[in-house]
Image 1 (cartoon, rainbow, N blue to C red):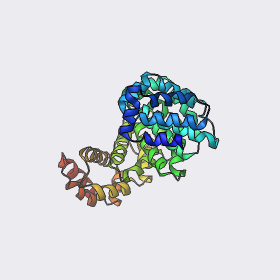
Image 2: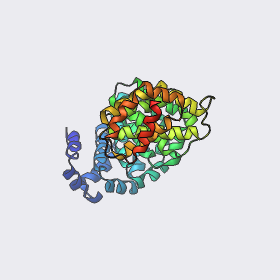
Image 3: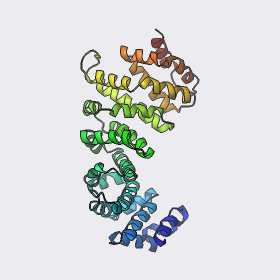
Image 4: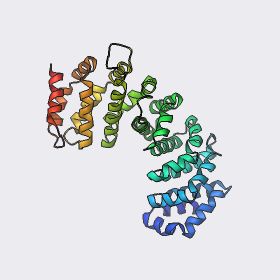
Length: 333
């Protein structure tokens, strides 16, 4: 009860600030000492407490500079392949805290150099979805702006296959929401078209991102638009001929099979009038790319996108009505 009470107290911002005291607070220092404990309750409490202290960027930066992240990574290396129920609590706590620590941009490179990926990668074999949820979030946070790490991960077929497996075989809504976001962030942050052919060749990777279009969250809708745009640009950079066995043809097949038109119709009809400027721009660019190919034109027509575009026309964030009119004209032929 005492351990639980400590963690609960630290969920309050005022308490957290006071007890952290610029890294000199007695409670904070005691929690750090508990990271060396052999008692599961004390260890997990110490880790969770550190995670609560790491809810401010300035605290996270101070902690990483003081070596806390390295200590946590070394600790996780002792538990990262365990499947025992007793270790799940420790795994969950460690990933929760590491996820918080990698959020500040200046922490990411150092934590990667400390070996984070090598330690958390074996955990993709775990099927405990409370842990998987935190694992996915940690991967997503740490690749933001980290080109080489994103490029490395998006090039690993076993990693992509595991993500897709979790997306379609988990009953944990958090996991099913995190997977497409991580896939989209991999596409965005790898800064290379080279892995795209391999990415789309893994079954249901594209479908997973396409289905995120219908999310109720604007940020996820926009992430889906942006990632699919990049895939079209990257796959089309080698060939724009949809009649051959090119990457662009494979991508077209994947988005059509994923019924992208249905998802676009849904999101435009429901949110078209109130989308922010970034979402409107990315959606418009996506439709412009899709009307370059006969098969996607026919697919969009069958999904009645023309009617849905009437909602977009009412959006005050549209910068260029000519683009919308162009798309409408092509689909009305």
